[in-house]
Amino acid sequence: MKKLKYILTVASFALIIFGLAIAQLFIPDADVSYSERRELTQAPEVTAKALFNREFSDKLESYLLDQFPARESFRRLNAVTRFYALRQLDSNGIWLDGGTVYKSENVTNDTQIEYAARLYNAVIDSYLRDCHVYWSIVPDKSYFAQDKGHPHIDYDRLISIMKSNVSGARYIDITDTLDIGKYYRTDTHWLQPRLFDTVDRLGDAMGVGEFLTDESEYTPHTLSPFYGVYLGQAALPISPDDLTYLTSPYTDSARVSYMSNSGVMEENPEGVYTLSKFDGMDGYDVFLGGTQPLIRIVNENAKTDRELYIFRDSFGSSIAPLFTGAYSKITVIDLRYVGSQYLSNFVEFTSGSDVLFLNSTLVLNTAMIMR
Image (cartoon, rainbow, N blue to C red; front, side, top):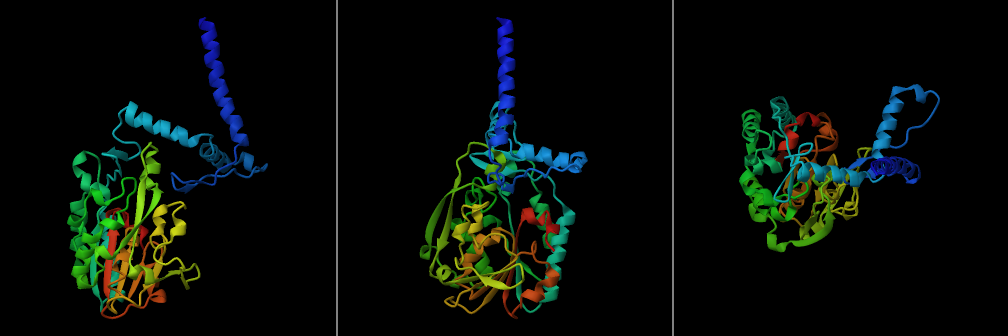
């Protein structure tokens, strides 16, 4: 009887291993992993020279791992085992609390933060001496969970370094206008429909508070399901979010242009919200088309003829549309994708305009990705 059990165990194990190996030969390779938001490794080209090349073996290993049959199921099984069976507090920096997914950031990088302040100063000195310049910081989700015992950035230190080093601009503190309920459960970003306190704080400081579009004038539209970036990294059976975007007569009448690869501004026919991107790699790209080096939003129906320049990261994509009623022209600039030394080639800064530097703590703590 023992021998039979042994034979059945070995046979079952062999069947699984060889069955999966055979399945990999016949199952078409996937191009991307939407849960991980990355392209998957494709089969390397087999040549006589490549067979004796270490790089080929590395690529082959990556390919086999990425294209392994039922890969997503095994990722989920691994995550469930770690969190619920082994009771680990986190997995690769991902942790849960009350149905919300967080990611730990355990290093406060003074060098990176000081670089961000110097970059702000350089841009101000080079282009913005005749403008009204403001700056603010978007706290990441862990700011509101500092008492949970997980590693996090030293936010007080980060803000202190920035305040001590940024010159020629006024700081607007928005941290008390936010809380964890204003962020997606499964993603790093904030929820556009819950930003009115934040928009009011920024608008009042910049002198356009009375011209902002009232919350009652917006119409919400919901897209579902929205799988946030942390949901894919956690690989846990957690329900996705809904993505809600807001329209008003001002967002509807705004004309939006992006800078193409050739440096020419091209109009986006979809306007402020690029709905065609919801089913792409990142549903959050609905807001202003996602990653773009330079965006212009022109609204002839705005309540003023004032201009606003926003130096931002991805958080700025969802808050910028809420200023379309107060500014006739909004220029959105991402210094991660366009070097500050080249700005004069693409942007003409109008004297007397408002300028807002709005970056998240996550970007400031890795600021050398900006140029």
